[in-house]
Image 1: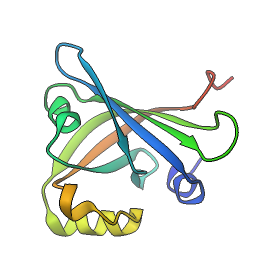
Image 2 (image 1 turned 180 degrees about the horizontal axis):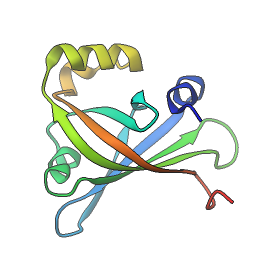
Image 3 (image 1 turned 90 degrees about the vertical axis):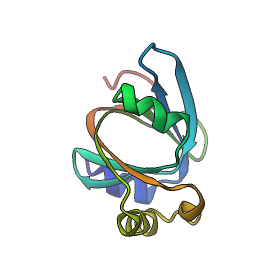
Length: 125
């Protein structure tokens, strides 16, 4: 499955969940990720709790619920691999994802390895 095509073709809402080094969890609304390849996703992040958690715990889950009836969507299990503060890179990612507010909120481009993809509901079997 081409995840970039999936996210370009489906509208909906996303939530990114992270935890700090002690396991305290937070969740935040996030736009769709950009996929650099079939295993690498990138999100633009502000200097807030989600980003702070990723400094001590690289694991995250992104839940995406498609618009419409039912519980259709994806769960992406992620592991942070790097981040960058390159303004030109962030502007490029924002343009490809259709973000209009990156300038106020986007300070970091955070890259993740996609460890596993499951449907939003169920175990995929």
